[in-house]
Every structure is written in C-alpha cells, then in structure tokens.
Length: 432
Ligand code: HEC
Ligand code: HEC
Ligand code: HEC
Ligand code: HEC
Ligand code: HEC
Ligand code: HEC
Image 1 (cartoon, rainbow, N blue to C red):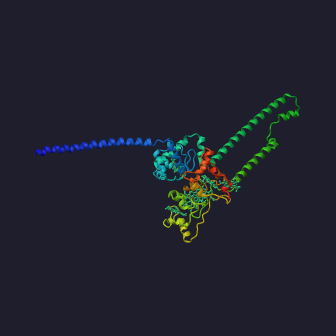
Image 2 (image 1 turned 135 degrees about the horizontal axis):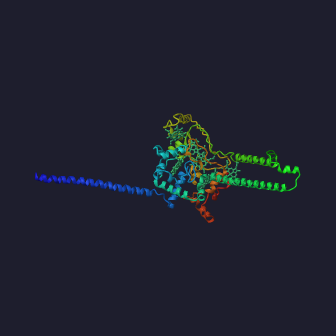
Image 3 (image 1 turned 180 degrees about the horizontal axis):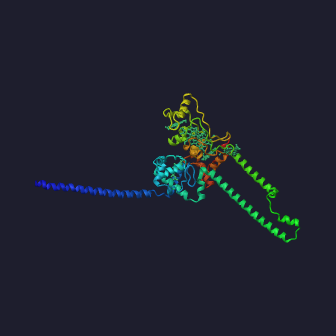
C-alpha cells in the first residue's frame, strides 16, 4: 500500500510530466512552424523578386523567344497581351507561374482575373508549358522586365517576327507627318494670299477707279466662279488621280499575296486539338520538315495510328473521324487544300531553316497550335524572306561547317554573322 501510495504520485508525476511535455512540445512546434512559415514566406518573396542578373536575362531571352514570342511581345499586343509590366497587374508572381504552367486550369478554377483576361482575348487558349521550371519562368520575367525598361529605339529591333509590320507602320507614320506638314503649309499660303488680297484692295481703294473696276474689286467671291476656275479643276483632278494611283499600287502589291488565306478543308482537322491540347509534336505529322524541302502533309496512315482507337471527337462526334476511316478503308488519299504556296520560280527548303537554321515553325507560320483552321500567317513574299535574312543571326553553334566562315566574318565585321553574310541575298540561292 505504502509502496503503492509512493508509486501513485510517481505515476501521476510521470503522467503529468509527459502532458506538460506534450503541451510544451506542441506549443514549441507551433512556434517553430510559425517561424518556419515566416521564414518560408520571406524566402519565397525574396525568390519572387525579379532578377536583374544579366545571366538570368540572357537565359530568359532564349526561353521567351522559343516559347512565348509567337504570341507575346513586350510592348505590343500580339495574340496575347504585351507582357511588359505584367508582374504589376496580375494577382501575384505565383499566379504567373500557375498560369504559364497550365492556363486553362487557372481559368477553370474560376480565378476572376484569368477569366476576365481569357474572355478579353476571345477565349484564345495559351499553350500549357508544363515543362518550364519556376526558375525558367522567373528568367523569362527578368528578360521581359529588362526589355520593358529599355528605351523605345533599343527594344524595337527585337520585335523580330513582326518587324515587317513594324516597318510598315513606321513608314506610314512618316507619311502622316508629311501629309500634315503639307496641309499646314497650304493653310499658311491661303492666309498669306488673303492678306495680300486685302492689302491690294485697300491700295486700289485709294486710287481713282472707274465704276466698272470698282465693281470688280468689290465683287464678293462666289462659289460658282471658284468651282469653274481652272486652278480648282486642276486640284480636284490631281487629287482624284493621286488617290486612284495609290489604290492601283495597293492592289498591285497584294497580287499573289495570300496572307490570311484559310480555306475549308475536307475534314475538320484542328491543330488546336492535336498540336495545342494534346501537344502532338509537329514533326510527328509533318515528317519531311527536318529532312528536306517539303514539310509534307501526313498520310491517312499517320492519322490511323491514333484514330483506329479514337473513333469520335468531342466537337464533331463520329462524322469527321468517320471520313478518315472511310479514306483509309477505300485506300483513297484525303484531298487537303494547300494553303502555303510559293510560285515555281522560288526555292524554299524546310530542313535548311528548321534543322540547320533552328528557326521555329511559329516564326513563319504563326501560332498554328491555336488554330482550328490553318491560315497563312506571313506574307511569303520575296521581301519577307530577304527581310529575315538581313536580320537573323546564323546559328553557328556546334556546327563545324561554319567555323571558317565565322572566322572570316569576324575579321571584316563586328556584328554577328547574319544569313545575308553567307549568301542569303543571292538571287540564285532562292531562284532556280
Ligand atoms: C499560343 C499563344 C501563346 C503562347 C505561345 C504564350 N502565350 Fe501567354 N497568353 C496568351 C493569351 C491568348 C493570353 C491571354 C489570356 C488567355 O486568353 O488565356 C496570354 C496571357 C499571358 C499572361 C497574362 C498576361 C496579363 O496581361 O495578365 C502571361 C503572364 C503570359 N501569357 C505569359 C506567357 C509566357 C511566359 C509564355 C512563354 C513561356 C507565353 N505566355 C506563351 C497566348 C500565348
Ligand atoms: C496530327 C497531325 C498534325 C500535327 C501534330 C500537326 N499538323 Fe500541321 N497539318 C496536318 C494536316 C492534316 C494538315 C492539312 C490540313 C490543314 O491544313 O489543316 C496540316 C497543315 C499544316 C500547315 C498548312 C499546310 C499548307 O497547306 O500550306 C502548316 C503550316 C502546318 N500544318 C504546321 C504545323 C505546325 C507548325 C505544327 C506543330 C505546332 C503542326 N502543323 C502539327 C497535321 C498535323
Ligand atoms: C497522336 C494521336 C493522333 C493522331 C496522329 C491524329 N489524331 Fe486526331 N485526334 C486525336 C485526339 C486525342 C483527339 C481528341 C478526341 C476527343 O476530343 O475526344 C482527336 C480528334 C480528332 C478529330 C475530332 C475533333 C473533334 O473534337 O470533333 C478529328 C476530325 C481528327 N482528330 C482528325 C485527325 C486527322 C485528319 C489526323 C491525321 C492527319 C489525325 N486526327 C491524327 C489524336 C490524334
Ligand atoms: C523560315 C520560314 C519557315 C519555317 C521556319 C517553317 N516553314 Fe513551313 N513553310 C514555309 C514556306 C515559305 C512554305 C511554302 C513552301 C512552298 O510553297 O514551297 C511552307 C510550307 C509548309 C507546309 C505545306 C507545304 C509543304 O512544304 O509540305 C507545311 C505542312 C509546313 N510548312 C509546316 C511547317 C512545320 C511543321 C514547321 C516547323 C517544324 C515549318 N513549316 C517551319 C516557311 C517556313
Ligand atoms: C524567320 C527568318 C527566315 C525567313 C522568313 C526565311 N529565311 Fe531563309 N534562312 C534563314 C536562316 C536563319 C538561314 C540560315 C540557315 C543556315 O544556318 O544555313 C536561312 C537560309 C536560307 C537559304 C540558304 C542560304 C545560304 O546561303 O546557305 C535559302 C536558300 C533560304 N534561306 C531561302 C529562303 C526563302 C526562299 C525564304 C522565303 C520564302 C526564306 N528563306 C525565308 C531564316 C529565314
Ligand atoms: C531569300 C530568297 C530570295 C532571294 C535571295 C531572291 N529572291 Fe526573288 N523571290 C523570292 C520569292 C520567295 C519570290 C516569290 C514571291 C511572291 O510570290 O510574291 C520571288 C520572286 C521574284 C520575282 C518574281 C516577282 C513576281 O512578280 O512574280 C523576281 C523577278 C525575282 N524574285 C527576282 C530576284 C532577283 C533579281 C534576285 C537577286 C537580286 C532575287 N529575286 C533574290 C525569293 C528570293
């Protein structure tokens, strides 16, 4: 009993002690976890600071050009919003990461900002970049920020793919300035003439004039005499002729230019579903693109690799896929309507650009993976080819073939070697 009674308090004691310990441990745990959370928040928020490190900016530039440039510019709206300053208008940096990783998930979650933006951009879905790491996205933001903060002139040439259009707007701006200048000069001349006329009238008033002359001097200007005057007729004829001439020139320039051409195809094949939603590699279907001149349109067999299993689509049910199966079973090729087509006199080689040059499909064909119906994105004129050859650096990295050329080029010039420096402007390279 005594041993018991001695034992009990001991038990009690050992019983309360762990309790106290538990309390102590749990509150310590809370404390430390709070500290940890704070430290973590601090850590992440400092990691969310957009870097100004040149290495990060450089890495970001590469990633931006490869993944985002097809749809985004820094200072202009393209397919998507101008990305400059995006960190200040979105809910958070984390939001950007989630959105870039999988924008449709963010939109589906009902996020107000995302839904509003999505509707504003006519429900154009941004590609999901699941493979980009958080760090990659921060590098892209670093690049965008540095471009955004650069003065206008420096950033302009980086516009790249759309530079053709930028050039056009620049020249049309000049035209506007010239036109406004001319109108101002004409107004000035009118004022001067009016002043001279009134001065002359006053001068004539002081002279002795016959009644007839006085009438002429004081006759009010009447509309009929003005419209019948040879000067007026000349001006009108000149204006009409000039406008007509400009219209003719515009039509001539667009002869054979099929930018925007998007014919209806025999089967409602959608790049948005295949290349966008299901991220099937372009080269899986356009097998020629790395090997030779033609990218090639896939044969029915390639479609059947998947569509012998997938028999109906969510949009068109069985109808459209049924046509593939029918073509396969009847051994009849599908008659796709050709969209991009250079005249026979010009030579264009895909492998040269995609494999050797490392040019992205989207640079020339636009954001195909967002198109339900393919449309011609670029002008495909000679000026378009040449423009890019003037601007684009040759990708010589890891290609021994170029070593000598690069050496030679370095001796004569300080700028990186462009396509034009290796003969990209020679007629015979593009014409048979
Ligand atoms: C296929 C075209 C496309 C590509 C490629 C693309 N985006 Fe987008 N992006 C969009 C569109 C369209 C929107 C507008 C929102 C929407 O419609 O989903 C958008 C919106 C955004 C926004 C929100 C902008 C704002 O104003 O709030 C960010 C950030 C963004 N994109 C980043 C990127 C980054 C980074 C890349 C490259 C890794 C990229 N996007 C590649 C089309 C694209
Ligand atoms: C599942 C197969 C498939 C995939 C993947 C695919 N395409 Fe296509 N592509 C086609 C078919 C079929 C056509 C012809 C029908 C049409 O124009 O929609 C075509 C047509 C085109 C055309 C127009 C050809 C013409 O007539 O001038 C271009 C350009 C193109 N694809 C580029 C791409 C790019 C770039 C990608 C990757 C982002 C891609 N395609 C991914 C099957 C595919
Ligand atoms: C790598 C697999 C793959 C290949 C190759 C492929 N498809 Fe598909 N296709 C799909 C998937 C996945 C769907 C989506 C089915 C769905 O929406 O449930 C689809 C859907 C479709 C649809 C129906 C779209 C809708 O929602 O109604 C058509 C039409 C279609 N494909 C045509 C083609 C043609 C033509 C080719 C060959 C040029 C082709 N596909 C090659 C995977 C493929
Ligand atoms: C440097 C610009 C450029 C790039 C990069 C480019 N294309 Fe093309 N593509 C063209 C031109 C120009 C034509 C028209 C060629 C012709 O008519 O001879 C064309 C035609 C096509 C056609 C239809 C005719 C054919 O050649 O079979 C397809 C399909 C196509 N491209 C797919 C692609 C794919 C896929 C990629 C990326 C892997 C790609 N292109 C990259 C410029 C380009
Ligand atoms: C987006 C930019 C771009 C466009 C647009 C473009 N090219 Fe090119 N082109 C390149 C690059 C980059 C190379 C260099 C490839 C290499 O490393 O040899 C090249 C190389 C060439 C060459 C080989 C030149 C040589 O001396 O080896 C020919 C020929 C050519 N392109 C024809 C064309 C034609 C024709 C068009 C228009 C239908 C065109 N290119 C449009 C970027 C472009
Ligand atoms: C980078 C490739 C490239 C180079 C270099 C090039 N051309 Fe062309 N040229 C083209 C393409 C592509 C077309 C077809 C354009 C079209 O259909 O609008 C073309 C069209 C033409 C045409 C026909 C215009 C018409 O109305 O059909 C003539 C003439 C011509 N080029 C002359 C030349 C001469 C001369 C040179 C050398 C000083 C030259 N080209 C260099 C790509 C090139």
